[in-house]
Each structure stands twice: as C-alpha cells, then as structure tokens.
Image (cartoon, rainbow, N blue to C red; front, side, top):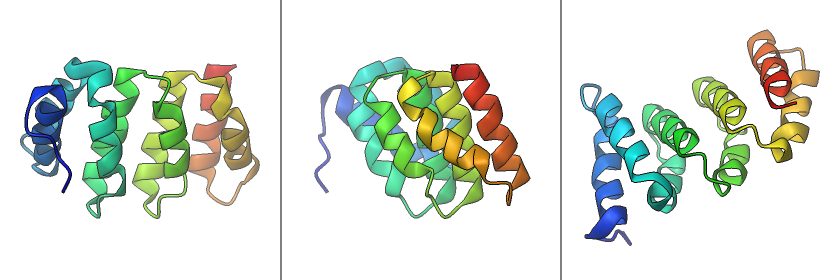
Length: 129
C-alpha cells in the first residue's frame, strides 16, 4: 500500500483502520473530522473498501469535512451496491449543499422503485436548492 507513515495523512490512515471496529468507529470518525481537508485524500481510498460500514463511515467523515473535492467522490458512491451506503451518500450530499450534485439527486428522485431513496433524494434536493 502507498500509505504515508507521518503527518496528518499518516494519522488519517491510522484512524481509518479503526473504522472497522464497532467500538472505535465513532471516535475515529470524529478524529478524522478534526484533521479537516488534510484527511480527504486518505478518506477517498476506503470508499472502495469491501466492508460496508467502513465505506459508510468514510462517507460520513468526508461529509463533515465539507471540502469541494468531496462531492465528486461521493457522487460515484451513489452506485454502491449497498443501500446503506447509498442512503448515507444522499444524506451527506445534503450536508455539503453542493449544487453540482443536483442532477444525480434528481435522477434518484425521479425513480420511485425505492421509495426511501426517492424520498431522501427529494429532501436533499430541497435542502440544497
């Protein structure tokens, strides 16, 4: 792996490894938030992790940082195979309030097959608009 061992990115990598642990994940996510924009590159990597809850926590942490680079990475996560990840991405996009995400959210809102995602997307669009 190409992980740095020092500095804020190294600290971010160490905290990301704790996201899989149920008892440590909330504290690790909060510490990642404290690192701010410096944690963004390290948080994008676990978006493709096989463990669903690591992806969910990475999405939450990215959303709390509110960095412009985050929206494009999260938009790709709308296609995640796990519904829980998709839900968290929609909620997080609402926190970011980035108008560039509206077309993707409108696409989800137009699909009524999954009522919960449909409703979340509509609520998020209203939050952003």
